[in-house]
Length: 294
Image 1 (spheres, rainbow, N blue to C red):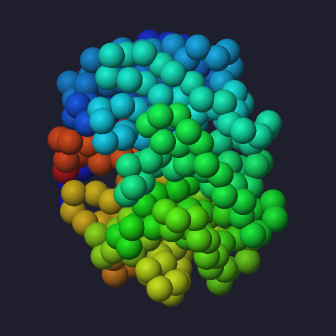
Image 2: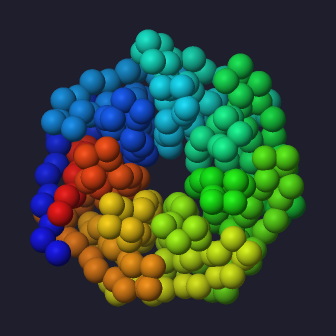
């Protein structure tokens, strides 16, 4: 497979792009946690930025909703942010102090769901701004990424308790223990096979969990890869970032790997998403947005 790589330099210095999502407008939206901004990049590379009102909010992950809006987590600001189609940012403080929201996704119920790494809760926010929270049964679990699955439930990684979690829209929670100790699950996404695929940053593995809780794990060929984000590609394979090795990895649903070296040293790729153009777009800590096509 011949890969074509392109990268775009960001005009805000040392902005540290982190999360990235595909908007309903067909463009890519990303967080810049050091620049305290939400960025937008068109498919032809045009960049615009929107400043977050709360200073040093620690914007991390971002998702698009059903009504042309973007929602994002303010990890330090302890808020959920909302960027309207008119370009206005609204912020919603969480009910408990120092909850440290992190992962975020639109849910099958029309609400936006998120994780609270320090609060040890899963939350959801309605379009009205009303917030509901659910406490996790595992203590100090550090819930991280979250996504909704083919079964209509929300699935999430528990980085510190070494589990994959599932919560229904009614708030019923089930936890699944990982076979590898201290695996450190982070990114998670729905796969083309209706299973959930996730990365294990400490174990250097890619994991797969079926809707009934059966778990498989696959060792990444490159050691100390530090996998982080993961997304389904246009080829029905799973693509993931290796921020420890400046690579983009690919795994098929049969467990076969390929890895692609990025040309920029210390790129530190994090979030990754499939764009409307059929390419993989990813945020690089080195102050660039990357694009892979084939």
